[in-house]
Length: 431
Ligand code: GAP
Image 1 (cartoon, helix red, strand yellow):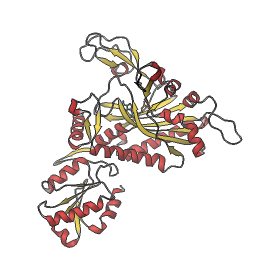
Image 2 (spheres, protein in one colour):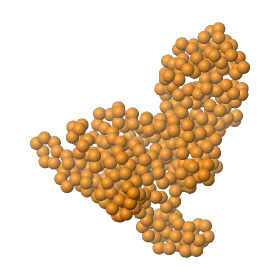
Image 3 (cartoon, protein in one colour):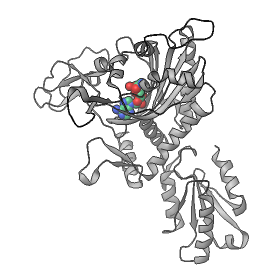
Image 4 (cartoon, protein in one colour):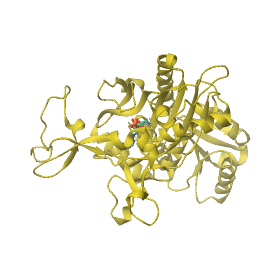
């Protein structure tokens, strides 16, 4: 299974999904860059999410907020005090660990040793994960600011403005996507845990008496979303987080854990944040309906790591068959929707016709062009990056105005009239 992870990392680098960050300078540990195909996959997931949870719902609106907020936000939210992981250090080799990650199995009664040298560990101390910076030229206390460790707070502090400008009534949600930053003690496993990462989440505001109903509703919606990503729900484990292990703001949390090759770990989370955040930010209750007293709405928060979504989608899609590697990504996620080839690169009439098709499809789809090597190699190359359809222009095409359309998953081929291509592709890509 670990082997699968190496294959994904290698394919991601070889084909331009994810590169090691700053590589020409020797890299930077756990910093990764999305390449030309990776950014398409990541953006396709983010757009699908936005469409599903924001644009096609009448109870959700979106915002896009600053990454650096007034430090008072983090004081009020409790992050400055509470957003920490337990850190231990080996007394012998000085390697550092996250205590909760090395205490195994549950219940946590063991006295673990350093996994590198077997040395004794120090007592656990709380290490704050907020990434600090200074605003302006003077590096002094008054200028300290923090890169946001979660995007949720932007939705809480903008609650009144959203309410005033959209006149929403409960229940409704505020959604956002963007970067978050955490000074992780043990980043690693490729894009699974990094110090800067992409989040998609929303805060769904409800009346207190209805929180259980909405918690269940969103738990189910999260399962439906996972199906869109092509994730096999058998590999998802919904883990109820017990008292004492939840984030400081949560009264109930269910983690959606996925079976990664390196173990079963969190993919997404669902939390009942009560009215904790709104109460901390607003002295007066910020929500009021006509004829009723103002009050603090309660919050259900589904949160989706975008990089972990990319990783899970790649792991699920990767498949090795007799003569090929194929990424069976859901069509909506595939970076390229089709590839166009002239059968022979040295026949100008084929190249010309294929180029015309390529140029015309490019207006509506992400389309790849390939005229290198033979057709078999081109199929191999497109299968490996998950392109659903390959279109080949051959000598018959010149006479009949058609192409061969080859399906990534079945490898079956059919002849399609060029004039019908865009409609047929659109239809097939709906799946
Ligand atoms: N607002 C709630 C919140 O931030 P979280 O469980 O701390 O909750 C949300 O983080 C999601 O962000 C996680 O479910 C996971 O998908 C992702 N995530 C958390 N830390 C990450 C990291 N260091 N690198 C990549 N993704 C991370």
